[in-house]
Length: 346
Image 1: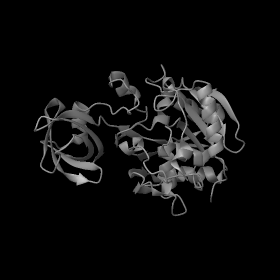
Image 2: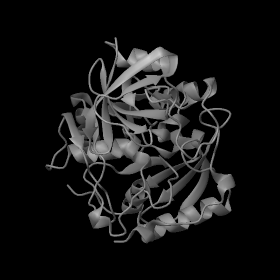
Image 3: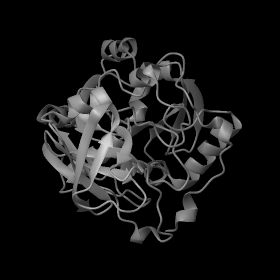
Image 4: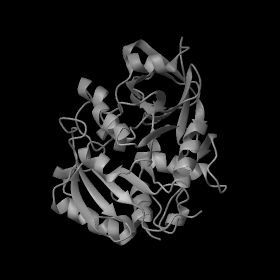
């Protein structure tokens, strides 16, 4: 399977630069992966599209203010994007610094933050912040919202609120689980009143989600690793839905990836782990029946995932319709509800 199989042309004006005025006001394209049919809806229609007893699983990761600017000791500019918090003082980070960044280098960052380069781990640098015992507090004070590269404005107070789900709890993500940005408290209450079971897991979305796929042959692509935690209560909710013949709906590709990774051995297992699961067409899904997701970048692993879930031809036709109908794309854009194309693997 080739990278070019997942390309498409998107007019730049359809890339959403700001969220909708209200959460839940976005459009929703409902795609039936079985029949290939699709319907234009509003995101607020979601309760009418789900059944009582269905389980809606959400990723409760919280986006941290992971971007820091500053200079090296030599005076050269640097930009730090924290990928993962290791402990109270250390992180893994992408660092744009030109040449000369090596172990022992010191960085003078915004708001009088100082960091030492401890070494390199693959594409990331290990940094230690000086006089710090709570990296999360430091980033909240000194960092900025790590908006995706296709959003061109500088982050502001509105982004700090809206590039975060209303149910975010566990800090650690450097990119939002964007399908969840459409939910507000009123919609969550309406879903519960309709009898939908709300469940949670945590997957800390890494900056790797925006990294381009560089291998033309997808068998050669190495997927980035992300940490997830799946509680027993969510496993129990999924099993109860199965027993009652109800559906499991993943809110976002991150939730789907965590659920499928946790079932890789056969049955869904609670616990915490790292996953490098790379989902391509031909993958047999074990857990998820329906997926709520935004529209994804050309040639991205997320577009490959939804193509596996709905069928490549169905996704191509749905995206073509979305472009012709001026849907808004990517993180601040509109959403899809996708019904899986193939039967679930038991």
